[in-house]
Image 1 (cartoon, rainbow, N blue to C red):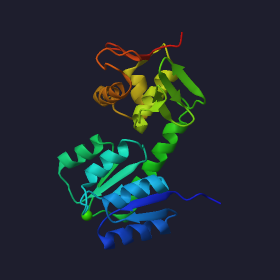
Image 2 (cartoon, rainbow, N blue to C red):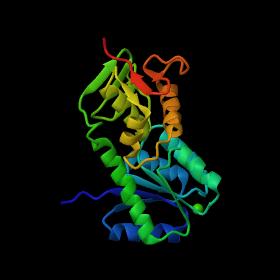
Image 3 (cartoon, helix red, strand yellow):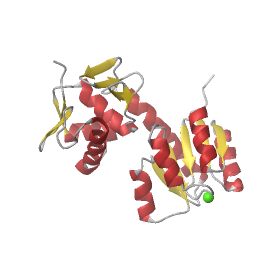
Image 4 (cartoon, protein in one colour):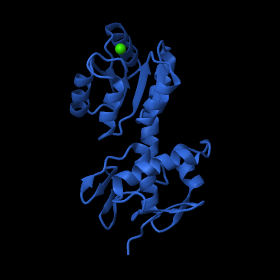
Length: 235
Ligand code: CA
């Protein structure tokens, strides 16, 4: 029996919520529904959905705040579906860690395609040959757990996003070697990704904020200026 992916629909408009649920169920997904932010947050921790569809205009809290709270501890794919079409809203949502952004009104096939892509990215991201690894890499206080996809500092999960984890996982796999910006971008964002060092730098700044005591003087991930990054090697 094929396991059905579980999608949580966070939407306060009954009609849209039911419409999405009907489409998804007919296309092989299981659905959960939440009409507000608080209900959504509690369902996310109790049901561990495979993907979240998130409306921004919710009655009890802004969807952006929900996204921020979820990203503090989970890398579950989140697709924002919103009537807000301002460019700034999209950028803000993506900055907070949304995987995709769909404007309302949306087409059924578009919604399904984006959901499948987001779920596939999560899977292939971690099955990716270059990252696939089992066991742990530990150097000083840092541990990369390749089976659970966690990075720990002194035993505490530092809550990396999926892409942040992939970057750290790759650097740990090749600890001691310099990985070039181009190599990292290709491995994390795919062969067709535009070589955009800016996105990589933003991710690295976030990683360092989470794992380094002083991000300006890193002890675990070093910058080789103009070349790439290198992780501290186990002595
Ligand atoms: Ca709404």
